[in-house]
Every structure is written in C-alpha cells, then in structure tokens.
Length: 335
Image (tube, rainbow, N blue to C red; front, side):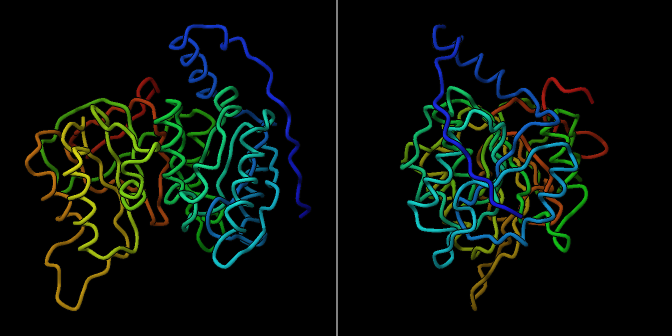
C-alpha cells in the first residue's frame, strides 16, 4: 500500500471566531459531535510505539468497508527503538494531521508509550478551529485528557488500528467503534460486581482512561478537573503495589474526592511480588475510594482485553443500575 502524504492546508478564520467565547465553543463542540459520513477522510497516525504496514492492513480494509477514505500520516512507518520514529518525527507527523482541515478523524495506530513525550510540542490552534475526532486508548489517554482540559472537546476511547488484526480483532469491539463514529446507539451493559459501591442512577460528563497515564500527567497542563465527572479507569501490566501507589496519589491530590461516579474497566495482566500484595487491583481501587459516597461500578468491558467497547469522552453519560446490570448510555441517544 502506498503511503499517502497529507498536505498542510492553512485554516481560514471561521464564523465561530467572531462569536463570544462560550457560544463559539458550543459551535465547535457541535461541529465535532457531527458523526462521520461515507467519503470522510480518516488518518492513521502513530504517536507512540512503532507500527508496520502489515499490522494495520485489516484496519484499512475495515475502514474502507465503512465507506471512509483512509490515509497514512507522513512518517507513519518510521522507527527508532520501540518508537514510531523519534519525538520530533512523531510530533511532526501528528501536527500535519491536526492542521489538515480535510481530515475528519485521527485513528491512532497503537499505544505503548511515547505520546506524553510529544504533547507539549504540538500546536492545537488549527485543531481547535476545525476539530476532528481522535480515536484510541491506553497511551492515547494523554490526547484525550489534553484536548478535553484545554478545549473542552470530546474524543473516542476505543480500539486502535493495531487491534483490528485478524488474530486480535473482536467483532463487538469493532462494531462498537463503528456505532460511535457514525452516531448510532452504543449502549454498554455489564454485570453487577460485588465490589460496587453506592449503586444508583447518575449522569455526568465521562472522562478518564489509563490509570498510569492519568497519574503521569498530574500537575501538567493536560491534567483534567474531575469535579462532578464520571471517571473511567483501566490499566495493563502493572504491579499491584503500583496500582495502590497511583490510587493514593490521585486520592491525596484531591482527584477522587468530588467525582460524580467511578467506572472501572479492565485491569489486565496485573503482576505481584514474591511476597504477595494481598489484594486484587479491583480491591485496591475499592479500598482507595471507600470513604466517598458516590457510585462505583466495576467490570466495564473497556480496556486492554479483546472485548474493548467504545466510549465517548467529554460528553454526558447516564449510568443506570438495573436488574440486567449496569447500563452506560450516552445521554441524548435513543436506546
């Protein structure tokens, strides 16, 4: 497959630039919440770990099957050790896509580590003028947090191109992403867990992502105000004591005190020491927030398992405790 270069097109002044700040922001949010349509252009970008073309062939086929035009960001297949090129290459690649008004969505190739190393080198001016969907999870939590904190724009926590390989693909995860980007109902239901606390129906703006990444951006300009938010957490391949360390860090910094609710997804492939820590990841999290009175729901099918259902961050969700289980429903969408 031939790599497609993306042309940097200067962004012209838009009508909302002449509006009062709050009204202009509402216009931008409404613009971004517009679903993708057949013929829209989606760019695959690598902000962290390196990728090769074979690993995203199935993703390209699926996206094209949905009627989308798929392009590769410049330098997509660069390599430097574990990274998709050095920091300068990766930031330049993402910058070109952020600045291109013809791109309607940015589909991250994979996670790993590295997005936090380039976030401060990026200029989001053009992106803020002509927003586009950013899709990914894990290390992409940096981007989710940064654009919500600084621009109050929504984004999509979902599988990435790498996860669409035939041997890794999960049909429900893929279909969940398709529903979100085309604005079809995408209600998520999961079983009640014994560690759930203060179960009740609640609504609020959903945000969060990977626990390790959220912990790493504390005190930075990407850190999110979690007051009255529904916080979602997931993680992978961490020592149990480190889960406790991170939860204590969030707690001591006041991040967990004023949540509207907490939803915990997959805590996958957790590791322990020779001398056991004595608690599971879920038990550690439950203990950390046991003094608070907001609802806490464990077991959302979102994270580093093959079944990784799509969420939209930065928009309002309803959490409903029913006899069938816990329902996560994007507010304003039909059931």
